[in-house]
Image: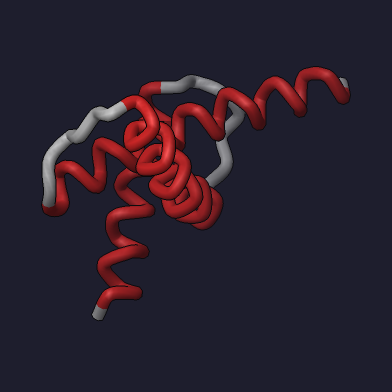
Amino acid sequence: MEIIGTLIIGGIAGWLGSLIYKGSGLGIFWNIIVGIIGSSVGFWLLGKLGISLGTGWIGAILTGAIGAIIILFLFNLIVRKRK
């Protein structure tokens, strides 16, 4: 059940991050991947800054979206440098 919850939260976080940060479109699969990785990045970064967005699904989605935005920003920096 935790895997399904992680996929749902990751998908929503990645989708929300891609809506907020307009960059290259990655599609639903990569949005889920970016959201899951973004959740880890967001949790780590906000923890270092001493910021908590709450517990439960809403806090996890917001934390994941912040991390997803950071990952999308870095991804677009790398892709632009190649072109």
